[in-house]
Image (cartoon, rainbow, N blue to C red):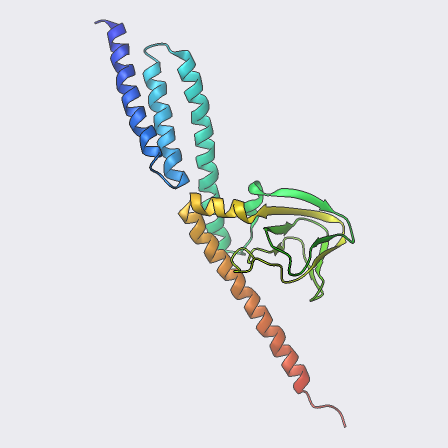
Length: 221
């Protein structure tokens, strides 16, 4: 049997199947199916390049296979982490890989009330205070995650650093990008944001009830 013809036919068939997968990826709007089809195309091109000893194609496709596999793992891990957050303590640890960090010194203002909101913040260390309400936010707190869903996209309070610390921030644009790329992520993020909103409403109701109870107490004669 002529192995050269066999290699040629295998290469042609592989290129045809890979082309089909590549064309299919252009019709996809979400990231996970796109990465899966990309991986399949990489594997087929590697297999068909072996009989022809086309090492350049094998090296390039293997590198692309690693990239596609890593991105797929990253997106699947993101969805798993969001699901876990929704079902546990509403942590946003899952967003850390997509955040940028910045150090703040005591006295610095991170943002002012009524200014446009473009990102949400995660407190890693230090102390930060919401000026208007006087609330000091603990390490691990998230600020501004609901501004993304607000029609006005403006800050409701001023945030000041009162003890130097580290902040991680992620832009609303990046969150929207992740939302569009993966419907599962979008669904669980909405559940997470809704749960946080209900937490805030519950806390506000408790403070109001405490205030009404204190004002209703009879004054001593």
